[in-house]
Length: 248
Figure (cartoon, rainbow, N blue to C red):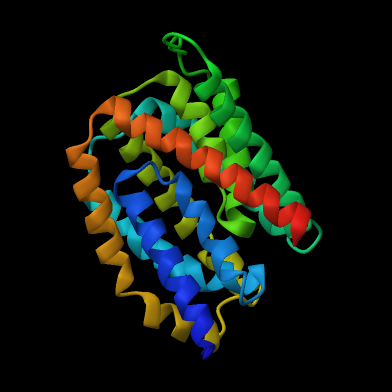
């Protein structure tokens, strides 16, 4: 079990942010979890500690948003995500954490800057199977290593301009499947150590609190505010990940 008190300071913030994101703010800002915890432990250990907590959060959020998802999008995204997860498993250890962070930062910043730079309303885009498969696979791939699948998924879903609850529910189902699919690969890679699991257990009570806060926020904002917050979180995420790549 990790004993460093500074780890628990960072981890408490990370877990609460992840819970709030999964509970009501699109899930994307959950990507800050690993970078925050990685200030004290390695990114690999941070990802291993965070995964069981994310799995519990996904189950709680799934119950809260049951039946509100977009089934058409999920039929394309979920098989793609499993392909991306498998690719992440087979390339684990070959790709640097910084390389993955740079990739996710590029996606996040591109969509955030385009959103805030535009003038007038954006044109709604219909979902496309080929595009959805690419973004779904990329989300599964980046999620496997550093739990950073939010920005690629949002890059595909946000231009569709679906209602915020549909967007949230679709994201919840996506990450429920992706995170639970990592159980066997993480065990195979030796990530389920007693120290990591005990640390996850200590942090686990924060999971329902974060989901509850996020759900309360979701029910009290309108679509315009919701999507402005989601895009702003993409901007912050992209800048944070880019900072980690360049200065750490």
